[in-house]
Image 1 (cartoon, rainbow, N blue to C red):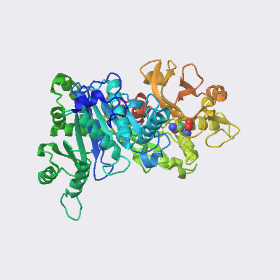
Image 2: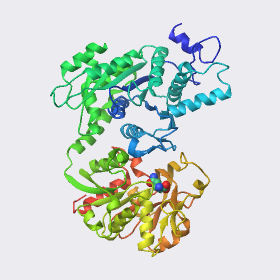
Image 3: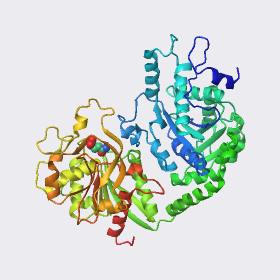
Image 4: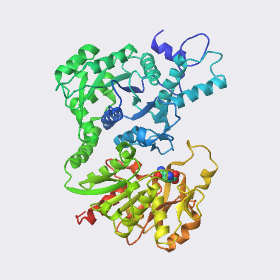
Length: 573
Ligand code: GLN
């Protein structure tokens, strides 16, 4: 049977065939192409950065792109994952809690993604088991192949229909050889077989080792890693070699020879100073046209579109390269040793910095050690401060002290989610005189819970998926700082992930003492932005504004913070 016949005849389960390829309504074979990105040798190669950079180059050429990340773990989403182990939990507009790589795609592609762009093994197996209970497999024994792999292909094809993408970028989590990701690779092998030639482009990322003691690049681990992939029936079309330094022609030749990949498709992808220069590097090396040729996309690209998009991008990258001012922003936090837990914030500061030709240096502040006595000396040299999102009591009192210092000493302040809530507690205690003001998260059963659990969350049990999640509209009060920041718009859309909120019973007393709630949820008494008139820049939000910052469109509250920090330093803005 040809793959064409196969795909048209086996969409239903039957006893007559071993094939199982359910197709969503409206799926047209060959319309959508797939680029599959896999990592070999080790994790942490930057698959997401590579994949999103390559995707951007195709998007610039007028192609419609949709990425999907396939995660191997059994969690249904990333909501219950510890950011210390897994990096920050990124929240999509539709409320999906996902891997931080989705943030990378949103930033690179300047595109809002949905839950269709992310799956875990937990989701795949859940769907299979639900179908089994529902009797959908008609008495068949349900197997990894073809049923679980069939579900993976179905997810991709559903995304193809839903997004009308020209190209879907499939990023497979983990490393080739992991037990938990093996069935994803098998599903991709089947996909390539069914879709036919020029439909699926396999890209393997690998690591070229450079042991310091040898002083030369070694390709054996890379060869073995790719070989492992080939043992699984997948012949890569393109190999990207990660390395500290540019990969030498000899090493590339060796890898080409052992993997059947033509030398011109074995690329170096060495370390760069910023992820934003990677699209340019891939473009210079010609990755984009190799993919276009592989997938026969020549007729669909628009080079005039690319010229415009590329110019804008280069302007951003040039700015990053020529930052002539500098500010230092302090960030307090529990996960201070792991930058990945604050990835979106770091990027948002970089975007705003580029826009203002300013290098934003970050000073991490461990708040578990902050006391009334040392807070002043810890704040020396800071031009601004952020208290980011967080959970739990550890370091919270130190954060409150830092906020008090920022408020009293005119240090520009941006409070994000937990940082917004801590600013309310600080104000209630030190300005309104409510000495015991607290949050019921930090001090359960406290008498003066100015921050309390949202009524709608009280009913929900368990830790997974029980927060107020996703993109929500924020109604902005005219003539406030927020209103000016958002270009005098009455509405802003921001991403949320919280269980607690300002207790409505305290809103009057807080506002009587001068706190202004300049953003709230439409038709609900949920306070979403606060500010302090008279202070150069004191603003907080219950949302995570960092998650909607994009390279060419820095988020307004971050831009405001960096501007205020520059002004504090006496720089012209
Ligand atoms: N822990 C707080 C809450 O649940 C803040 C959450 C956050 O910062 N994302 O409301």
